[in-house]
Image 1 (cartoon, helix red, strand yellow):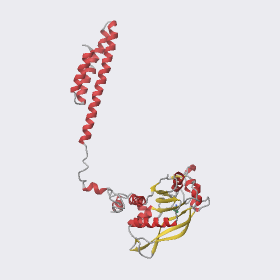
Image 2 (tube, protein in one colour; image 1 turned 135 degrees about the vertical axis):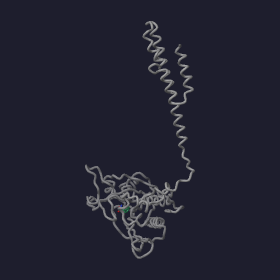
Image 3 (tube, helix red, strand yellow; image 1 turned 180 degrees about the vertical axis):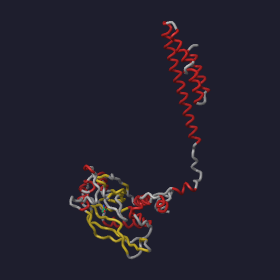
Image 4 (cartoon, helix red, strand yellow; image 1 turned 30 degrees about the horizontal axis):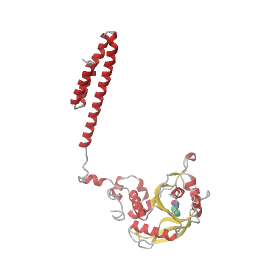
Length: 354
Ligand code: PHE
């Protein structure tokens, strides 16, 4: 039989093959140990030498072409099977969720509060900046005007990486530097993230979270800072709050202030907005001219404010969570109690928390 005919016959039979099994059958029939094409190749030895060369060439071409046709058809069938499988497994997202599945997962209070903060500051036109957890001395201290002799540099506070490989940032303020180096004033942003200090008790964990805020422009003054913080805290606590600004000291701000909110303790719970107690919630100030200068921003042309608040502390206050360490225990009972329903994204319009 002519090799062309064999080829066409195989192609014709492939057309009717529907499954991987059908194809395997054809393969065995042609190329198997006792297959037709294998037989042809075996028969070469019996041909006279003059014919052997041309026949050998022909048979080998036939073999390659048939192999290719079989493989192509097999691939097409595999694809078809996979598409059918995908269609079969289609999820109808319009179906109601089974009650159990919908209520199982919970959003961690820190993620919730982080999202709330971003929603509040986005509404005031603040962008979001980020920086690395592993920082250099320069970004964490030096550029922020924190002298070598400053107690914050003490080994007791800072986690240094072995072999001079940097440190774990002790606050989110290095993000101020990274952002100022890159951005042209005017700009304003918040920078939430993890921070680290050698500290551990009921209100301190070695890893905690801060949110940094910063605004730089030609006419930024303390009034902007005070209004921003007032608006932020009232929106966050969803009540009127009275703030108390106390003079303080940070090397990177001048003047520096600490901010307390009026509160009251009722049966072991803290209530924000009323009472005769004060609770510190953040540190802030006007950006020190040296710090602006360190980042190539002319302090004669531009001023800025900055603040830093503990996100964990804000979450504890707003949601009445007594022990900071419980945030990081990974206890399912705790997250069931303090966690948030996943499908509720906090927005100013829709209410921050359900
Ligand atoms: N980085 C300061 C801290 O961790 C907080 C702060 C930020 C103060 C910005 C002033 C301005 O305590």
